[in-house]
Image (cartoon, rainbow, N blue to C red; front, top):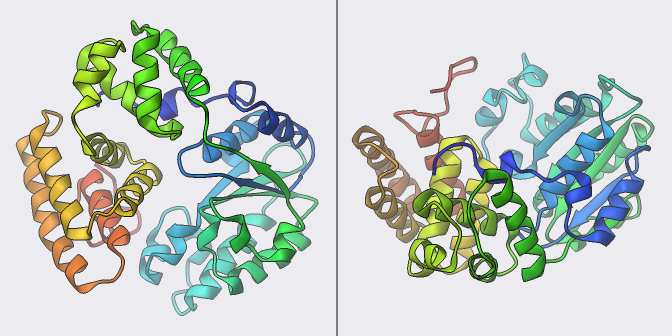
Amino acid sequence: MDGPLWTERHAPTLEELPQSEAREKLTRAVDEPMNLIVQGPRGVGKTAAVRALARRTHEDPDADLIEINVADFFSRSKKQIREDPRFASFLTGRSRMAKRDMINHVLKESASHAPVSGSFKTISLDNAEEIREDFQQALRRVMEKHHRTTQFVITTRQPTKLIPPIRSRCFPIRLRAPTAEETMDVLARICEAEEIPYDDDGLEFVASAAGGNLRRAVLSAQATAVAQGELTMTAAYEALGEVGDDEAVRTALAAAKEGDLSTTRSELDDLLDEGYGGQELLRELLRVARSGSNYGGRELARLHRLAGDADRDIAEGTDDLVHLTHLLAAWGQGRESLDPPPIGAEGP
């Protein structure tokens, strides 16, 4: 897949969010630090909605939107957390901290820093269904202490896993799976911006195949446009119609090369939910990578070398998603081993 992912290049503004009720509720949070829970199934645009809100709210959203994926904490080792460049500055000299204390410290420090512009900043906690209850209690205390200067936006597929004191402090915003018509409108807007020829049948084919997953629809449209140069029914069928789960696997590989590990993890999670075993999905990743022309011989060889270690980890471990995401992260960063890079190391 050539160039930036369309999910990033054509990220919606607040006004372009397709669901009017959610759009109106988010607009109310533009001028004051209102805590929010943005809930809905995978791929419906929760993260995109939070980023659209931040771009509308903050003069400097790159500085005043702090995004923390909960899975980055709870599925990783203490060493991996310390060496993550997003968290390293908070944890310098704190190597003996327990993992729970490290997480709480990063959260408190993020909330206590003054906003760069305006009167408040936004902290987004993604995949909040994975937050343990002890961390939720710490989060509640931080929310109470910094409620005047920090807006907390929690995204989750399962809001019932949040403790009542957090739910009571947040305004709920529900995102449902978009209709086929809403998805088609998004795809048409993007095709026009990209100057890609399309027809309604092609839009409908991609929208229907995505099954309410807007992110998958956008990435499928991009894959079709790259392969066929247009988004018509014939082009979409030839690019997507007989590939089964190959498109989801391609999306995971492409997102890893782009450094978009959130999409990588989400696609892998969906595939595992559909019934793949870890080692079976590993074989599919290798097969799809070999079958296309997007990756050179050296990239494929390095992926196979990394896959050998990942296969062992999957056989010995208990979390296939963590090991597969780790594999693609290392491959996307150009690393020759699954060990994380040292602090300060340059990327590819």
